Image (cartoon, rainbow, N blue to C red):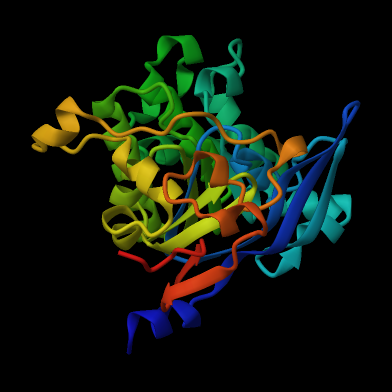
Length: 331
């Protein structure tokens, strides 16, 4: 059986179909996400990369309908086969934590500073399993802490008594508290040193392998995603501009933006990358003032006149490798 066939036969835990997110602001509509298609299967790690301002977190907010009141969402957001944008509050509340959960960036700001971490991990269990005895909840909390590499006795600690890496592990334990099938990690290694970052990524990868859950991990660091993910999608100005197997996207990027992201992180043992790190001038465009053609054209070193006139078509340079660039496939 081919790898492609095996992936197709796995259950799609998250299926985004033509998703758009537009914020209503005093200055007018702000299109943060513009027609994104993305699938995460069970037992699979999918990465979403891009600079700040490219729409990653806005897209993640649609997974469990966490977008602010001023946001308008279009397309379909299917989680475990259910369109969360059409669900009533009761089923949506049941889906959160038990069906899908999110690990937010900045664990210190996400945890209650005056509550012990054991109580915070146990809270979703008490809500979703109200008949479970207290002793069983305590045992489950200790099991979760041990699952993420911490001693069960640390349940009595307050957040400020833990290191950054330990707090991030607590957030992962909370996300796994109700045994969800899908986990979304939004910049889970932000502000962590490289050693702790590697430990957290290894932990996430092992949990996917051991528990068979699906994981969508968001990061601006393409090298991080290449190391931990099966597939990677690169987002720019609210669109997916390239997607494919992680090692292919990192080692042989086809879109100029993906090349810039890949080149921005020097490779160990590469003197040229060490002394002349690549970069990309400028910033992503303001969503209210998108260029008339390709959104990346003002920053693109390979732009041709045609790039300024129309949105580039999505070209499949190889099976499962879509690229939104008219020069895709060129050497």
